[in-house]
Length: 265
Image (cartoon, rainbow, N blue to C red; front, side, top):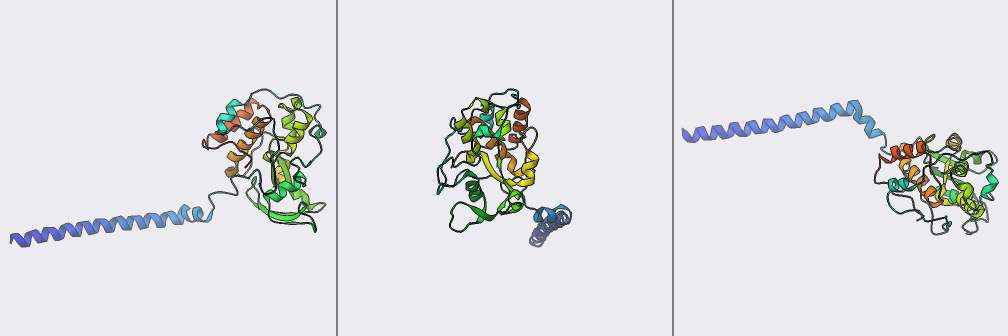
């Protein structure tokens, strides 16, 4: 009887264990099915990152760096922000685009003007006019400010759909230290690939001369890179920030404390 009773207890124990495992499996299946039919199917369908999270500075095969006033500080973007002077805006009354030299000057002396350099850098599948390795006539790209796919087609009206944005707007830089630079330094600032990104025309017009306190890209995945790039440009050209601008930049960088400054590479 003792042997039969022990075998019976072992059988009951195995049965309880099997039922426990089966219950866990059933609960897991119920949870997964419930999650899928509430939020899960949408989480699977939606991409986690909307568009690119960064844009390169140089293509070293055919682009050369532009000489800034001083090197971009290496390391944390948040730390570089703390090193920028904080001041109010200088008057804008005497701002003129010509203070930054010829528009789309070939600042790196690679034989192509800056606008076409940036189009070639940022677009994919780009085509050039016949007999040219500079003048881009078409291409596509994952636009960073909106996160949408955008096509560029050169034309009297269609070209405006893709514009080359100064990450630190020239009018903004004029009010925050650029007046104190030489004309050559301002021309470099206006043509430095670090400060230039191909962008959706409407988004660029909406930004205008705004800083981080008044405008940020709608594509939130790009904001850390965008703010770090503004900080890098301002550090490289000895520009300052206003207190509201600094506060806005800090709020963005709080979500990405690992974000580094942007270097020409």
